[in-house]
Length: 218
Image 1 (tube, rainbow, N blue to C red):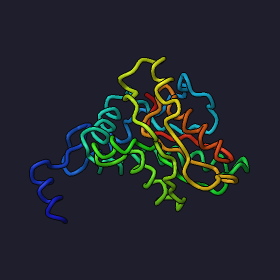
Image 2 (cartoon, helix red, strand yellow):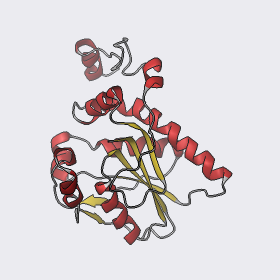
Image 3 (tube, rainbow, N blue to C red):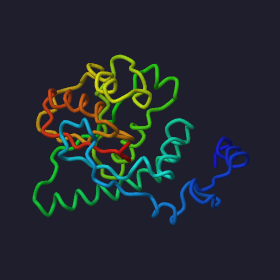
Image 4 (cartoon, rainbow, N blue to C red):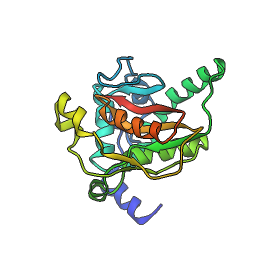
């Protein structure tokens, strides 16, 4: 154990975010209690095909986990959050295999942060999640989707403002995506405005299809 982790364990010991059980951020009982995605399509999402969402952000425990991961800088929470999401990905992979509609030449691409916001936060939570997916399934991680300009935080805006807030903020700075299926990773999909804009850029770059993946629906 590193000195940093030792000190963190001493002053901020691990406790389950649900029941406060010691030595874990999320115990098995609380993990099993997380509310699964109910199937309501994000209201502004233009393409609801190939949509994988694990849970509901209105679930208090899942809300607290994502908030701690994203804003309280507890990067270790990527492990239980990915485990929750993995169940949904595995279900989709099984359905694809049974229907003979398997993904091809997969690339994992996270929704990027603008460099100023990433510098302030110190990490991109969607990149951490995408990296876990890449390591688990041996699908290559690609970081050539770039956010060109800062935008207001989506959670602070009303629906109309959210739709306009992401227009023109992304660009593709890599090779052609022809023949590739893209797994586009975000932490939360609320209105769908961010995903819409990113998917448009990836399709324009030649992607065969874009599979939209998130921990929760907001």
